[in-house]
Length: 266
Image 1 (cartoon, rainbow, N blue to C red):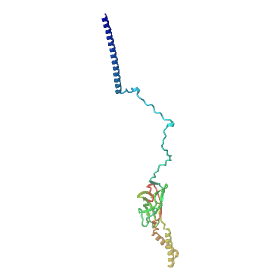
Image 2 (spheres, rainbow, N blue to C red):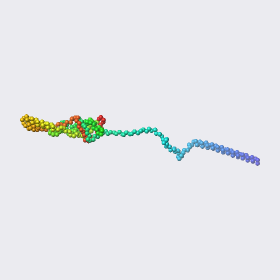
Image 3 (cartoon, rainbow, N blue to C red):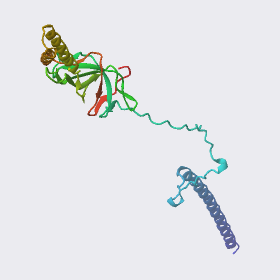
Image 4 (cartoon, rainbow, N blue to C red):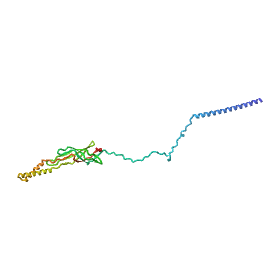
């Protein structure tokens, strides 16, 4: 009996030691596992990047605050005073129109005489003074005028006076020639009545004197002398019309004409 109790006591001790051993092993295993888990957890957390925000959690910047009047930026732009704008320059037209009825003087350059000149004969002249239209010179003094005789005739032996009519055809200046429409009135020469009267009277006086010398009637001689003087006057022409070079004539346009404005000094 005493031996059996010793065995029982030894078995109990043995069991108690085994339990203590198992408990110690379990505790050590738990401590090791905890260490490994913490190590793995730290390693994983250092290698894996943190998860970014979800679409609903994306960052939205706050609205920019408008600066208050006290914080408004100061502009350093220099403001220049405005000057009144000058009107755009107007370009003066280079052409001038002379209306119908415009008159100007012309100095004749050609000597015209009904003794030699006939219908169709040409002549030239120069503008005597600047022709001004609306304050602008349209035709300068010295411009050349050319034309022809529309009509020219000597006085008749028995009646009529010498006469001319001039047609002004064109005017030239500044390298351009412009056609114009203008004609003079008919210009008449002096009549031959004075000359005829002198011839008739002289014939009468001469006839009377001659008849008295011959012993005839003075009255009859005077009548005969007057008849002779009349016959002589009928055989003689009246004076020719002579327009000398340098004579000034007036030209009046019968139709408008447009010319290029002459240059200064042209």
